[in-house]
Structures are given as structure tokens and as C-alpha cells.
Length: 113
Image: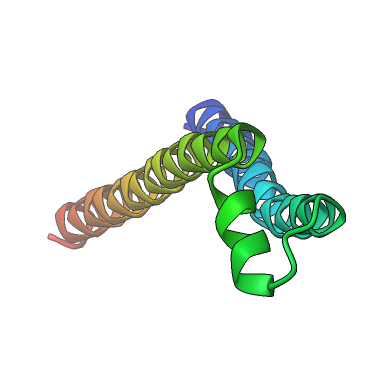
């Protein structure tokens, strides 16, 4: 029984590590997206786009910015999947605990008869 518990806890730790990495990647890309937008807007200002609106318009359709958005989409998908896998694994652990508690209660009931 203790070996099963240790295996399950190890699986939860591994899942938590995968979720943390995916979440970190997603947050990094979100912040990098903002920095890249600012860098592109600066470049467009140097090219003669005088208004902030024009700079932002050009920057948001730049291939490098769109590539970051695609990466952010993928990172978000991975983070959400890993988060749900972790939640499901935790629910499985709770279910296992309930089943073990039920077994113990049944064993106690038979002993008291």
C-alpha cells in the first residue's frame, strides 16, 4: 500500500513540474509579446510612422509579432492541458483516499461484530 502511495505521489510531483514549466513558458511569452510590440513600434517610429496608432498597427501585423502570438497560443494550450491533467490526478488521489477510508471503516465494522 505504501509503495502504491509513493508511486502516486511521484506521479503528482512530475505532473506538477510539467504544469509549472508550461505555465512559466506561457507567462514568459505573454510578457515578451509586450516587449516585442514596443521594440517594433520603436522601429516603425524610426521609419517615419509618426503616430502611435500607425506604429502599433504596423507592429501588430509584423511577422515576428504574429509568430510570438502563435507561440503564446500553443503555450496556453499546453499549460491548460497540463493544469487539467494535474487537477484530474489530484481528484484521483482524493478518490483513492476515500476508497481506502471506506475499506478501513468496513474492516472496523467486521471486527466489532
